[in-house]
Image 1: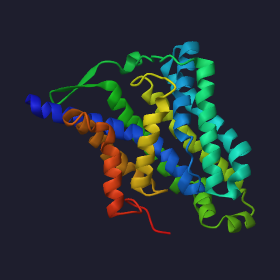
Image 2 (image 1 turned 90 degrees about the horizontal axis):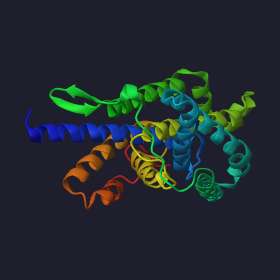
Image 3 (image 1 turned 90 degrees about the vertical axis):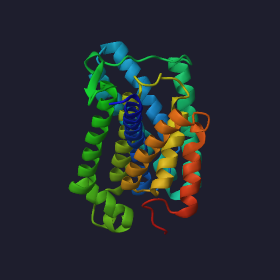
Length: 290
């Protein structure tokens, strides 16, 4: 394989890894919006919190796999508490109240991490079992990035199973269409929505732990990922998981090749893509006009 071909393949896999990581964050955001109608602007802050939880678990146990299990769980618990004691109280007041509340939560989380963990960047090492390179047709590629792709596909399969093959998924999808009727059948809709919010923040938590060895954990960690996830949700179609998946892959490749060929314009490529796409299809890739 010649050097040019090797570079293209490597960048394509880089883009796939970033796209799958982005999907983990965006899927939770679009799940919460699609099922509950809540545009949670604090979602990327839960992603950041998972990175800090991962650091803390590693300091206590030294075990990355324990961190991968516990940090997303702690993030989900935090999300459930936010939904139960904050969002649920203002959910009936409309989107403006929800947006203001989630912006407030985002700012509180940002200040909390500065108080408890400081403002310095925290470096998290790649676990020993996932270090090194693997040969792919003559191309040496980091094992950890391939692990991120595999983990994301595993979570995607789990998410599809929960939503379309379980009683919870059926209840939630029915509650979105007609919450009053589902309530009349004796099903606790607020509890179902609380579980959905917990699953959404759990997804952000998994992404936060997976991203921690690639990125340093610091208070601004949520900013770029939050903006990219927002672009994914809007372009994919509000509430569309399939749209979020395909747009995440497209934006991952756009980011990878943009950094390689036009690095000065790379930071604005996603927003240019969003502007052009929405001018052609305002409802997004799989969105429907209400």
